[in-house]
Length: 353
Image (cartoon, rainbow, N blue to C red; front, side):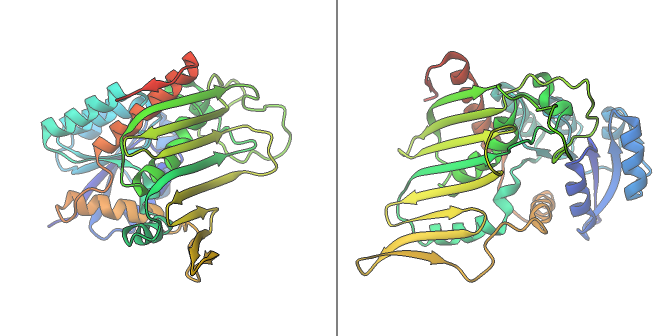
């Protein structure tokens, strides 16, 4: 088979991860870029030596030789770009979150089915070495029944600005941007149970902290002093699944804590685990409580994280693998996010099933 020709729609920050991974795959030809920001488009085109550059995605999608695209736009553009690409006969890897609502996500999934094309969602944490190690233990019944989990993705001062703070473009704040990673990872490790009810709370108390002096830790392309910030800066929620398990989630852009946190905890009938970021496990053996620390590297390695994801996408496009992050998983997660935001708005539990 000849090399798969790939286009990238949206060449902001996250696209660098996709592009560099495509360049490392011998079965891919990085073929074309598209972005509505012509300055950013030319910057990225020059950086990666891509000469086919478009400010209108339809011009890129009109190229019959393109086999697949990565959609790396702001969240509100995920659905229209993905649907247009699928209708043009391209396979699609769409960055997380799948969209800004379950309704749009379902339209994306329907477009993939209608056109007989692959739609893979960028749940990149599924392709981490830490996930693989935990899955190995889970598959060998080390933990028994996993019935409770906690996941935190907290930044002290980490609002990227730009479109991330504009709800019309992002769909929300840290819940849809950061929480999506850990909600999906926990659900994936638990065997992808379905959510039956959620209770959520969101706060916008600190905003994007424009008064803080010093270097910005996170900054999006196009950030300016005139940025809108109308998204939550903290979100918290409880998710109950159809197998009885419960997940407690916290995510923040701005929070008065000592240092950023990114932690996942799983609790089972035989053992528990914590990724913080090293993997630790807690069990009981021979009547004693035991703490287990592996000698193998267990902290998430970013070196091959996106490479693993992109390589899997390419294998799926070639028909060599079954997709590990299919559209239906994105729809399920969007249903959870929608319900968490609705619960936060109303102050009441939202029942999904």
